[in-house]
Image (cartoon, rainbow, N blue to C red; front, side):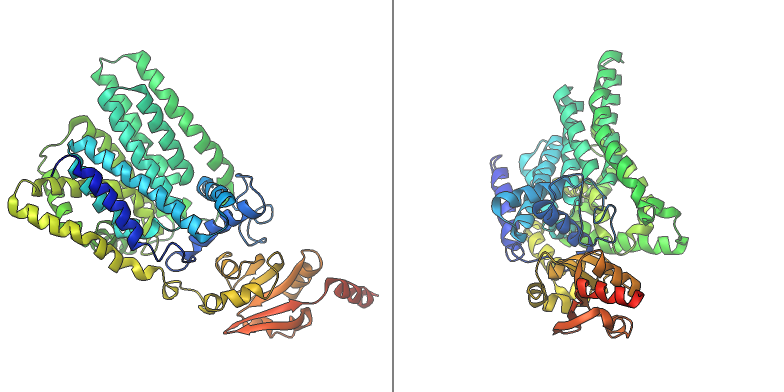
Length: 497
């Protein structure tokens, strides 16, 4: 292969990614980890429809957020940016999915740059980017509205600029590393831990250049400035996270044996099948063996990458019980290191004619394997929620005005069922809706309709007086018009007298 073949490989990576995702671009949100996707898509909807203030990410449930339906988790730069794209292109799930795909492809290009810096072989780096793009984990999430994808892309480019700064001592590279670090931390807080990498690059340059204190102090300025927006946002938002298990991490109520089970599951199930790709596993094992033999370890580069890997392992140890067997996207930050090891092994394969043939065969198979492993993830069967909300979502959506405030139950997410029927209001679960609450929502909170798949609630003799009429009954979901608040207020006055 000639050096220019790397452009062909990168272009083929883009085209193959588009082709294999083609049917997903117009597909509405559905499938694995719908909760967080729907929450982010509600942020996008509300930025576009109601409140463009980036500091006010809003969800559907007016009774679960703060100051109404405002719910502040990660800084909503991704959601806000997609909402601005919808201002131009119109509100559509296509806009969200295309935006996410492009953000993911930025990470693929960043990984190519990272591998090229380390191996000085553009074709090898492009093959590494090809493998990275078809990590089943990345392949699935890169089309879904999760902030982890732009955070990962920012992390990768931060790694690129950190290595470039160490190599060239160009202050602009350090500034760009700081910008990317800031973005990664804003998109998702755990990614901020990889700030140790540019700091390690600065420290290594300090010793390499004879301990020059002036440049050393100057180098800390962009890194410190980059931390301020992250500290400001999360210092403001984290006060509302008191009940979130992610803050407790491993100090939550999880036994050692259960943690060990999680670790073995991650190592033997997720690592080969989802974080890498079964077709890339052989390259990874070869790269790991070569690394353990300390062949071709790249000095300062190894120290920078090793510092980041060390912080990543600490993050993993802290959050392993939260990751459990559910939150696989928490492991996205590890993809660059895992795939660099695969590139390291692939390089060794190129030195042997027979192994080179094997590597071409394996590389050719990674898209099909990624597709076959996760294609059914975009399926209603993988939701884990009452399917009737999705089977009949169009009828349920249009049976009540879009801008009407509704009561919805049972939904323990606060966003999923509301997303399916495109309604905001007051969301409850556990088959509970006290009569005094529904009275308050009708009289003072402008609730006009009730969506319910809970027969315990909507057939209760205490609740039936608040139901004016049944408008629709689809599957297990009923839609009621609530009693008129004016008539209800008059009746209440008469009753009080």
